Image 1 (cartoon, rainbow, N blue to C red):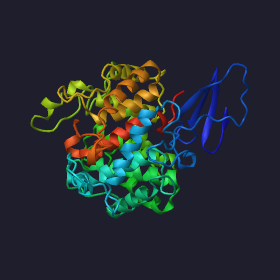
Image 2: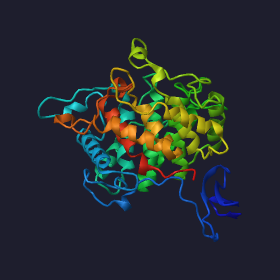
Image 3: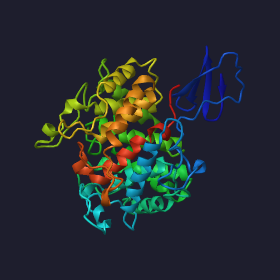
Image 4: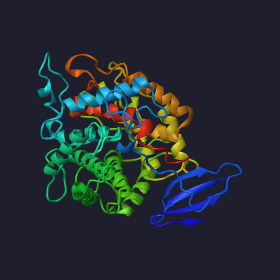
Length: 420
């Protein structure tokens, strides 16, 4: 056993386990090569290895920045990411915002883009666009999208209320936008070491904590006694980023999330929306007809990735392997007639299956590329973007679908594997 100021290392058989010294949460493990000795300086790989500006090999947004051409990547994927980021950069407002319903104002030549989202989600789509740029290696200090990120961070700061909330609470689902914006600000602060936004990121985390139900997790309204896995997954991502970058986080909330995940999951691996096995929600009207809930495993994907992010190990949590098996049966498929397009599902499913690794990940990855690479627009003002043809496309619009597609394609280098 070896302890540092941050980590506790325990050797068991042929494995070295790394724990957070404060919470004793498992952060990862690594095998010890046969015949190797373990010196006191041995460290497991970092929980996360986001692409950073220091490792940028190319600064052209279409020729591979950060880890885009690293292990697991290929030229078509790298090109798609570069074109998508270029489209986002070209459709950012001068004040730093991405306009969910008015982004086409930037299309000055030819036919303007379609695919408007809802105006209430500007904060959320701005956060997603930032995450896509940060995930590819740009920071507020360097990289091809440095200026776009600085403008976006400044705009989000301007949208923050004294209580820490990003944006207004006019829409019933405003907490999604706030959680995503907070996640983006925590990443921007930590990856850039940009202390001018540290206070804003911390205030965002503080609001999430004030919104959480006592002794439970999150849903739409602050402390109303309702909980759901979808909102909770985004809040947990913000908490995990904040904790990684040494912001103040209520670690008991993470433990309560673990309890909640067990409460809503079934032995066959399905993770429910608000209760065991409950499927995803749909909007009123014909939304559920156009996008049948049995075509995807969105909450299972979100729950599985959350479990990985909290350091849970499939060897000791059989529900994780069962969840991965469910996802392998419903890989990404771009079919507008069948209603299988769900960028939200594909995002969490991709990150969860990357963590699972093996044949399941290879199969998922192949399906993801088949779904996304041929469907990226390549002409006119829409070139580089993806149509908002999925489940939540009408809410987030073309900015949402493009940012989420880029984030999914970045999966093989945005995070390292958390369990080894």
